[in-house]
Length: 368
Image 1: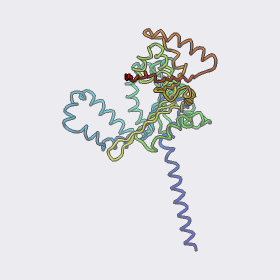
Image 2: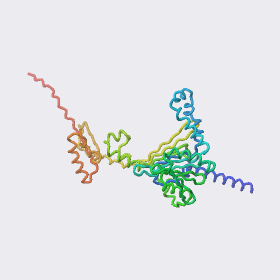
Image 3: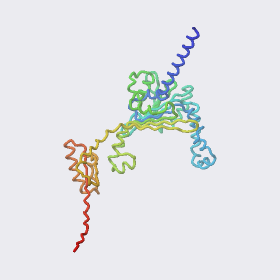
Image 4: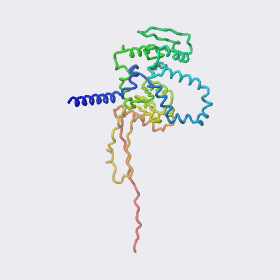
């Protein structure tokens, strides 16, 4: 009896572990980072594990093709100058062994994006600062302006002057950086648990969670864009361009961009292959009114052509505004204006035709 109870207990623990693991997997790996970002984040990119992604990349088919001698001979003139800098950067990344690396655009104000980024590193802060100091010097052109301020239990280093300014701070094994001091302080508050409202983070944003529901539970790299602010900037550009040029340049009409709620994509490696997922969130548009074909009874059995169409004044009201429009456009404009004022957003128009074939007369023969 005791043995049976032990078996039941082991089975219950195993079942609980499987349930917990299967339900916990979808919440990672992005949850650690997105709880640090505001819900209004415009764009976000995440690299969960640099070392693992690099190893998987080197085992991929495309990397093996890149290593072919013929390809290397072809690319050698293009890569000689950058090879040294790239090798040094990769060596620094190996020392840091970064995890949960992210970069986000939290705000676009007066055409100036506000960035915030960071990653978890291995080793001491002193060893990490040797590498971060070199990167900081490359990013900021004027290193003469430097100050350190205290915030809570942290020291924030600020290098450069606005708008070319970078503020960095260490929080345990985390390094955070931003060109916006206020945003960097907000990230520190979320990391330390002082920000108590989780609903204000990107992780609990409904649009973000809806997009992430279509992503894989594990990935090598992920990006997310909430194009509300971007669409406003694009719309400003669109007002200065003709509709034809705007659609040719961006691939979408100006009003279509406003409908896009989110764009999300992820890529992962699987046995040398690269699998990617792309999701674009667009709300379901209202359906057009159903064509009743009530004018069908106006035709007869001899009708040879019947056409029915739905005319939307909102879409056709602009006819006749271009320089090469027909004279009929101005007349249609007035008709559509009257229809809109009377509350008729759509009108059903049908055209019927009746076959009018001439009757053939048979010649008569007179008999005398």
